[in-house]
Every structure is written in structure tokens, then in C-alpha cells.
Length: 217
Ligand code: SAH
Image 1 (cartoon, helix red, strand yellow):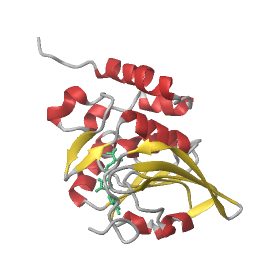
Image 2 (cartoon, rainbow, N blue to C red; image 1 turned 120 degrees about the vertical axis):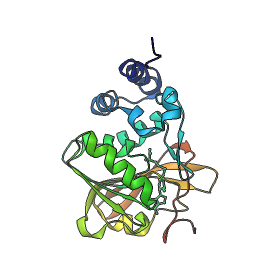
Image 3 (cartoon, protein in one colour; image 1 turned 60 degrees about the vertical axis):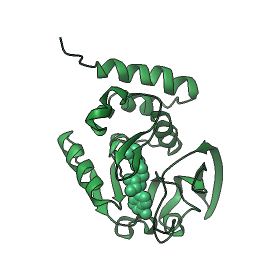
Image 4 (cartoon, rainbow, N blue to C red; image 1 turned 90 degrees about the vertical axis):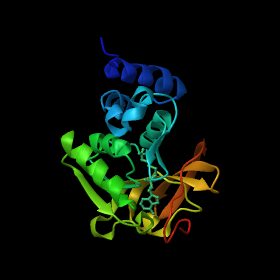
């Protein structure tokens, strides 16, 4: 009768058609993205588009990232389940859920408090108990719980914030979009013997990272 959407099928198709053909091959990433209900993190009016191959608005001029970008950034962190992971830009909380499913503990920071509160409620409803939240400027990192094995920044930065590099463990990975306000390159930084090795994962477009070590408000 009603036009209920088969989210399970939509997720399966997303993994098969959007992720696997584009080089997402970490089985843990594919598994977790095949399970987490992305539909819970989007606005009701956009439910029909929850699993589509593009970002969606989440209010406060912010967006939930395209599934492929979420997968690409997550895969780059090489998570095994034992990591202390820091996320900057909680937004909808969708990426947070993916990281929480693949790490030991996730520390997530969001500067727009209403977004943080909404994400925290949804993630609690879904039963996550390994996530710590903070309404703050994430460009400063989260000193209290450093160092981090993995750091993900989900907003575009003019350059990698130094505090985040400082809070990475030896051997740790950091993924961040770096560029101007209109387009960025997805950069993976690996800390090896105190050096920061950079790899370019390709072009992307994110909302601004606003803060002391980001764009000015
Ligand atoms: N991973 C999120 C992406 C949200 S968009 C998702 O898929 O839903 C990026 C988010 O970064 C926005 O919510 C924005 O408010 C937040 N943000 C921007 N600058 C920030 C900063 N300095 N510290 C914390 N969050 C920031």
C-alpha cells in the first residue's frame, strides 16, 4: 500500500554499484557500509535519496558526504578495530557510525552544536557506546585523549592543521581534504619515523573547515 523503501536492498546496491567498482575492497569497510542505516542520518524529505550516489543537505548549510567518499576516506585509515580514532566534523553522524563500527573508540568533534546533539541522539538510539562527542573547534584536535591512531577530517581545509599532526601516533594515518573553498584534494598523511608522508587520493568537494587552523568564519 504505502511506498515503503527497501533500505536493505538500497544498501546492498550502494555497495555493489557505487563502492566495489571504484576500488573499495577492504572487506570490513564494505561490510559495515552494507549494514549501517544511512537513511537514519538524512532528513525525512530526502529519505528516497538516502542511498543515492551524491551528498545531501543536513541543515545549517552542511552536508552528509557521498557514500563513495565516506568509503574512500574510511578505507584510507586502514582500521583494524583496535584504534583510537578522532573525527573532525560529526555532521549527521553517519561517518561517525562507520568509524565506530571499525575502531575501538571514536572521539568526534563538531562546531555546530545542534548538529552534534542530533547526531548524538541518533547514534545512542542505534546503540553505539564507543563514541565521545565534543562541541568545539576540531582544528585544535582533542588534547585530552591523544595520541590517535587515525584521524579523519570531513571538512575542507586550507592546509592540514598542525595540532592534528601533533596528535597522531607514530605509524598513524590522517585523511583530510585540502585546497581552496571550491575544490580540494583528498590527502592521506602517514606519520613514519616522525616524518609525514603524503599521498593524494583524488579530487573532492567539501564544506569549509572553520576554525583557528582552518578558514576564518
Ligand atoms: N561526516 C559528516 C560531514 C559533515 S559536513 C557527515 O557525513 O555527515 C562537515 C562538518 O564539519 C559540518 O557539520 C561542519 O559544521 C563541521 N565543521 C566545520 N569546521 C569544523 C571545526 N573546526 N571543528 C568541528 N567541526 C567542524
